[in-house]
Amino acid sequence: MKPKVTVAKHPMILEQLTLARDKNSTQVVFRKAIYRLGRLLAYEFLRTMDTEEFEVETPLKKATGYKIKGNDKIVIILVLRAAIPFVEGMYKMFPLARTGIVSAWRGKPPDFPIEVSYVKIPTINNDDIVIIADPMLATGHTLLRVADKVMEKGKPKRLVFFSVIATKEGIEYIAKKYPKAEFYTCAIDPELNDHGYIVPGLGDAGDRAFGSPY
Image (cartoon, rainbow, N blue to C red):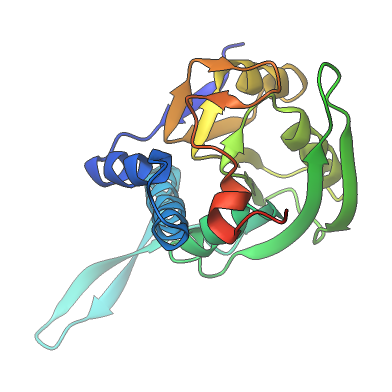
């Protein structure tokens, strides 16, 4: 089964992605670009949501109104720390979303062991839409581990991965275990280097958003 992948190509997404990639962008510019990309990607995702009609009273007469169905069934899983501004942008489109937080990071190649130090995920219902958000979907090892933690809390109606940049390798790695998963991203880059970093990518998203800890 071919993975369900949506690469958003809105002109504003392309512009903000360029700012995020640019090594000369300041910390503030980079963080704002990631924030806007989260909001715009969520906007694109809303195209997949059903709507229901209802009657609304205007100052002049009645008209048909619309409400997004299921917007109160979204659970966002934030992967620390790079996803913080990304998810802040997503909240603009998903104001009723519940949130889970996972601190997970990838070890050294070639095995890329995953260390998870903090997990706080709400109970997942079978009519929920779970969105796992991380700006970089590289090898897929980290996000697969996060998805496994989600599944321990329940089986959602939809499992979705949001990223700024992804790789085909990472998407396929996750899709082997979760073939019905959906992937929304702003770009699919061509390769990973020997350290498992996306090339050309945008560098270390956490360091660029919040500064290097070293």
